[in-house]
Image 1 (cartoon, helix red, strand yellow):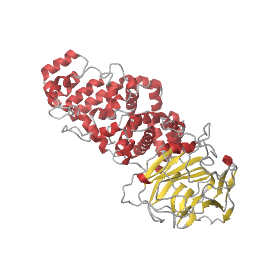
Image 2 (cartoon, helix red, strand yellow):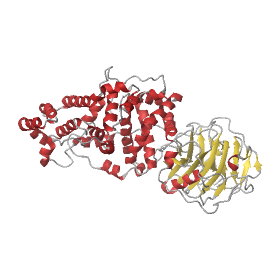
Image 3 (cartoon, one colour):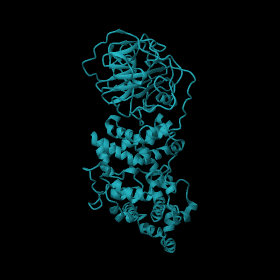
Image 4 (cartoon, one colour):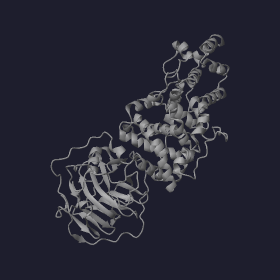
Length: 627
């Protein structure tokens, strides 16, 4: 997008109408909502939720063209939505929100193609991004003229052009996105095509080289609908000879012709979204396609080199590749992320095409119950502990990416589900009160059983449960899952871990610094070492059961965090070490002492000696209590 210094500010009569920002959020225009969302707070969360209601579905639909799976599409759309809100105050740029968001989906996908996240992208997009650029001799980072003309227009006209000509939305939709009355939009809607064409002509004249300047007006005439007049221009002006050697003017003639045809929507989408934009909305394309053929290129095509006919494509490719999306940590845009979660909820991401594992015919593990307390609890630390800042690792490390997740307890399915093969399972079922799964454990301090969920454990911040020895091999792949009901957000609180000499080998926990669920694994048995970590998308909801799953995939050097069976993100973890102390529930270990004691309920803790895949984690999250 052009910077504010490069673009003319719209006159007062052309500016986007001031929305009733002091009124209800649904009546506000898109840019007002985006600025509120960037500001945070309750108003920001409400504004972000409304912005997502308006634009998130189209973002996911376009992201699906760029990615390999529905989950990857959701992840890409969320990341782009976050970046769109972050960029608005930083760039001080006004623009139509929908094409801005979709362009950021493409830019973010281009960023993913530089690291291991390229595995999430579609083969077609990767081929497009890696194709050699056309050598036109004029490739630059400058916007193509059609895109520059679009961005020169006032925001209200940008919104009208995109939604009326590209997506074929109605006047009422445009009015809602602008926070104005439908009758006001009807008054200027018929002029949007002419305004875009006029802006294009202005740019063409401003940037014409001395060799092209004599033909600028002739291009306009040649693009008009009067074919006889256009033919006369070709025959008498030398335009045809000029087009034979000037790719810039050939592109301009094509653009000007499209702007007079029903195909202007496809042309505009194609230049703003150079990957698949021209055919993104095939079911809404106006009759007649892109209008009559452009005379110039057809007349001079015999001497045209393939790949050189449209130098704008090379510029668009270079522009997309060079604009690396800088992603700010999730905590910096919490209101937008919360709004995405509130909007998408759970059901949209459960119907993802993943298979569901069949229900086993027999229980998989020994169901667990409590044993007597064996020790007293150490007092919690009176001071707030800060995690060490991340250090630069010599091994490549990808920033964790995120995808939306429901923060509420998903409803149980009609039949109970289970997953075989757990090496430990503590479900605290009152139906089987004698055992603590395949690895015995002890209640310590203020930890006890509760009747909730047909038997669970409850913690008051002074107690925990621990096994008699190690359960997890932290140097190999493993999975730990649990149902959790937090009742406090005070300090770090660990759901599950395993003691080393000084720190836990892994932490599945709540972080009060980020107000998110967190999975972390340290590079060494030291409180001063670096940590790989992943944060959840949504903030935990107090008093509600939520399913957490921590996965360490040793083969791929990756940790993954799931909430409600939905992948939240991943981070690279290269340096492993053996934490050979007891497995703990309700606390962690920090600087050699018990720490991060939990407040609330924990149930159905399971440990697997392998990295579960997403379908298996989904099965765990859908299981009924004590299944």
